[in-house]
Image (cartoon, rainbow, N blue to C red):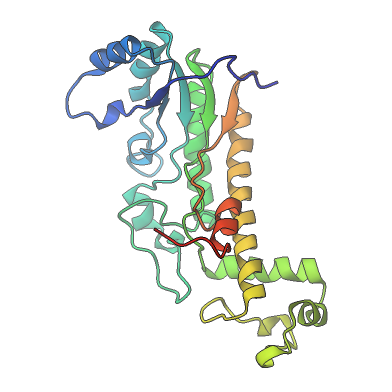
Length: 267
């Protein structure tokens, strides 16, 4: 059973690995002086956890966790899957998310990938398991954050679109039902076969757009649930598993609702 803290926790994300010189003790002492009770660590540095394909470096976090525990500061440990390392993007360019025109997202920021792609999932699961197996038992860790602010884009990769078609087939059964429910006689959009379903590029049918965004939101939910399931294999009783949401993300259920609201406009 998950046991949430009985009081509100106060703290921040902490990235000791970002520092250009050694200051861990100073930072932790300052946190203790400021009455910090929690820090979040580890979620944005996959290339630090795994600098090369299959070569893991996990020990760097140990002093952070030990120092936090000594000062009574609790820790939320993040999985690093929202910021893929350059070697993964280089060796598996096919994991890049594609927009409606088929253009691949260039690597260089974060969250550029199709997180449903099997190659991405293989490597993501491997690093998640390595981190969780190494640190789940540490007494400072009270819970895990899987990924971070998921759903910033709608990937239009071939596999994603084919799953969308399969999802519609499962929901509607046959194209005649889809034609009727979506009113596809309009503008000569009536389908004869599932192969006739057009891709999102150039779509002007609002019912299609709504179904596409809802499908993408379900993909995001599945991705987070998939990660949570892996982490729970290692989590101790009482440790929680959560994620971090940004409400305007278009491939998150909340983001899809906001984006379809007539009162919403991107900033």
